[in-house]
Length: 314
Image 1 (cartoon, rainbow, N blue to C red):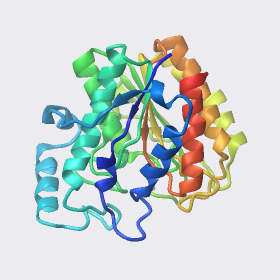
Image 2: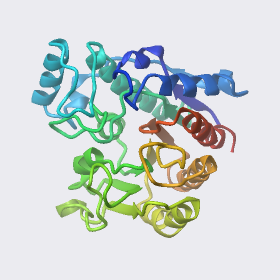
Image 3: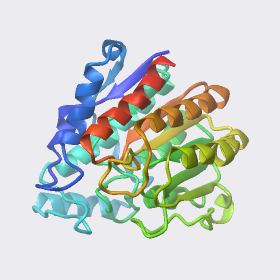
Image 4: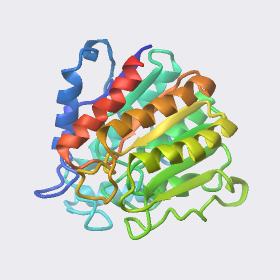
């Protein structure tokens, strides 16, 4: 079983300033750990590329894309809030994060690999149609889902978001859609961005295709695994996705400074094992992980490796 890996040093050129948690070193520790793994040379290496703008426009408005380009070119330091710090290279890097993600989709759908991991910056799941938010500029995973449907003819897509923060942008992208199921576990209430109530289940034709699973502060491996077993697996088995996409944030770790959830590194391996089994049943084993959060460097690299070990070896 072949695994694809998307990484390039260009993603570390997205500079967010001293003290910002979403910093370039996040990718350097991940890549160093993966390069030291015995399977590294067997990974299918995916490189950044520039996407066709029509695919970004399936999620973001043209006016937003133009505004982001204009403001970054003019030297702004933040987009839409003090959370989303940018530098003069950030627009091009954000485009290449999207483009690399779409190249990963091509690799999976063309049979070059069965699954993959996108080690990209900036992250994406908070980005809305018309606004940046929470460190995110373009919604990489949402754009990838639309691309898979329009370019590769995929019908049913599951997005599972285990980042500690609710993926408001991804939910809003698909809440009226019944061909994409969005499932999120996140710290709630009283945690950024404040959305993700269990009453948010979708709108119109999409009602029932959004599953929010709020996790109380202090929750740990046991509570999360129970949610996977009792809520997520049944929902995925009923939906029968043709591919599974993961918003892989690692900020619910007990060492992370931006949450009050108490997951171990091993938990991320177990989440991956569960989803991999679902992918084997319904999705021809096709599964792609997209890096979102994770801000303690030690636990980030360790948790990513737990995920990778399952993707590659088991």
